[in-house]
Length: 277
Image (cartoon, rainbow, N blue to C red):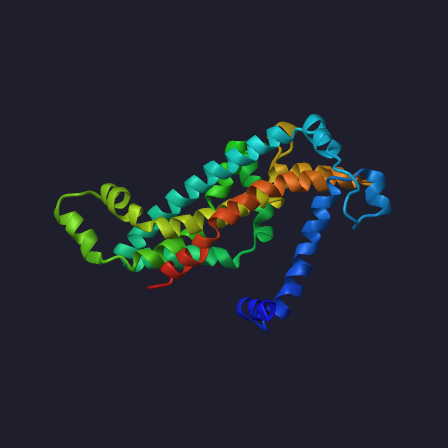
């Protein structure tokens, strides 16, 4: 009776449908992780079974024979600098649009939003020519400049949130003699923690997991990223699947931990930005 009451209090009818769906989505991650603790022979003969022993040779080989640490430093630097620029540029651009609505600023908002309608692949050739002309190919500063231009989503989220901030706060600061830069960085920007956090989460996950842009604009192994190292682990004719899976886990693990700690801020930031969108 106690067990029946415990199940009734903690589980609902909807859980009976949700749990199998969760199992389906979690199975690939289970297969990915257990494969990293198996030899190639064991993966080939019994791919879905739990490993018979804790084999760490795949991790040793990955860290000894691939530039995984260099790739991690490149990816971390690329993500950190790009996200910082995206947040600062995007929220600074949103400030005049939200607090000084006029025809020009409204037109700029529409122009930025039109960027969502143009797929990246449609302008890929033009972007490559621009990067080549500016001598930004195969360089981390070039990739940072490329990602920093993707601040339209941050502008959209920030404008919606800034419109919920009382305009009297901005006007009072102007009366006191504060300039636009001081008003933004000392008054407006500190009030935007939730929307800033949401922007950081989305852009961090985008840049960390991006494959197309680094694969096109980065050529040398010294500027490689984690996702490119995973791609290079797959051979044309044969693939060492345990090594491939191990590289995938090493790549996914940091962003997975980041998402677990930050996920509670996503809905909060999105709903805050929708108050007066």
